[in-house]
Figure 1 (cartoon, one colour):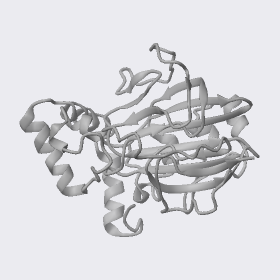
Figure 2 (tube, helix red, strand yellow):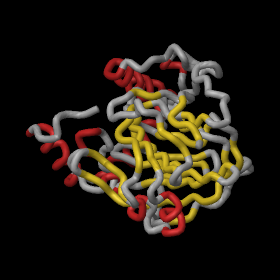
Figure 3 (cartoon, helix red, strand yellow):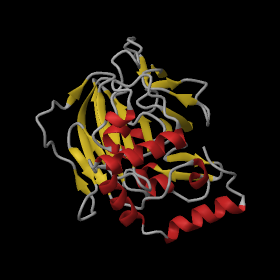
Length: 291
């Protein structure tokens, strides 16, 4: 997931991110990845395939060059049977393909970011005290999506959207090297927070932006980023889509790699014991059992 954070190369990588024009570079990536010029989109796709070797065997369209743009290739759909979901109503399933960054119980308001680093719910949710109070002392799972992963985000449980808001911020990389070096990384970066309810259970999905993540979107709001002006804003319903989605339904997408943080209230569920840092996970597999 990243280099040794104590190495000279890792320190230089992190230091450079403080100097880069993060949002400008990300806006350039946004435009490039949506180009439909065959020579440009094929060059980008070929370079990516040669570098990351993504698994195309479970994609609806397996030929990378048949996608209309790099972004269409990057956010490609999978076959219907590619990610089966545990049908047990008590099974909370993984919302993304990726790697566990951290998972476990919150220490009051504190979530572990990496060894020696923690941040608060209040900072992550940008001061939304009623919601942060609900999740205090609960559990969380931070899931990192590498560039080669599938980049659609799915519902871990059936749920009805109750609140959503955009929080502006930086665009640091979210890989393990940066997480181990930048204090409060996930509460500093740009992010979208979606709070959902399933009966009496409330859960939240926090979509964290990152360097070169050209856009984040949800099925309820369409593209939320890039955003101008970049200021905090509630995200109202702007589409005809129902605010209620079944377990396993797509709820959002990333362009390029990033991170999703799942939040659960106290005593709501028991996380799988094997969710340790570095564990690979896939959409649909069971992350926790509801209590």
